Image (cartoon, rainbow, N blue to C red):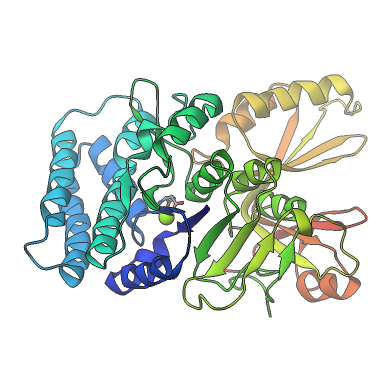
Length: 422
Ligand code: ASP
Ligand code: MG
């Protein structure tokens, strides 16, 4: 069997759903199809949640906009008598019902109770359209078999229990195609959880590894994995094959092409991952797999941009050295505040650390660190990683930029630079 994953961009309108149906209709053999929320609906739901938690009555307008968007797509796909309309209505009724209640003080919990509706709505609509097109499939509510802890918005999958339940649910006894949601799961007491933004790739990888898929295929609006994000770099080219390790390095340093957690379950089970285009389904995309897991003789440079960085520089007020005690003490603070560290540079007197700008700003961090250190910071920075760098690659991409920190190993060069993009 194979797992197909379709992201939001692939089902952003009726034409997208039809295109998905044509791809699935042509696929042979057993399939699990994972579908994200339509278009930018997850963002729209995030806005709805914010309004709800702030007790802002604009939440009703926001709900109407989300409803109209789905209704438009359904009207383009179905006759008005299709049962899908009442199914979708009843989902909206449940959202409305929740919106009438008073929000609890736990924002992340409230978030998870709403955010999954994007995927529940989209998968219902897509499943119904496949059926209408003669493609038999079974819609599965993944929350009954993908079990997690209650770390809201970033839930950890209970692998053992999920493996058992998923193997039972996706048995292929009477079905050839299952259709289900990415990104969400549920606790043992059936409260909805989510796995982190863009988490559907990860769901596809989990399903693939539990069900021992031959392959996981991620259908995107790009022809495969490019060596650079066209938003930031000139002349990107497609990479035909890539090792698992390379893919992890890329996504970890900020390449948005697949969710960073996707590779591990696939690597452990030696399942190839194919990233390919739903716009040009006949074009070979990028293959990441066991065959590709060898050293490259002649790799091309790969550029990754991680924006929204802030560089924090610590020094001892009395000119003493940055010793292990000071390092341990400061890392503990970063850890305690859940900061994501991306680059570390140490000198005799300074420790410089680049982190993602946290949602709530850095003031709390600065205050805590100031207990022991003199603290300086620079924001408005981006971290550029060049894997398999060449002198030319560095000249072209870094030459004109203002570099704050630079680090090189044999294969990787990293530059913390002042933003020059909008
Ligand atoms: N719909 C969710 C998001 O946009 C999950 C996903 O698309 O992977 O983050
Ligand atoms: Mg999405």
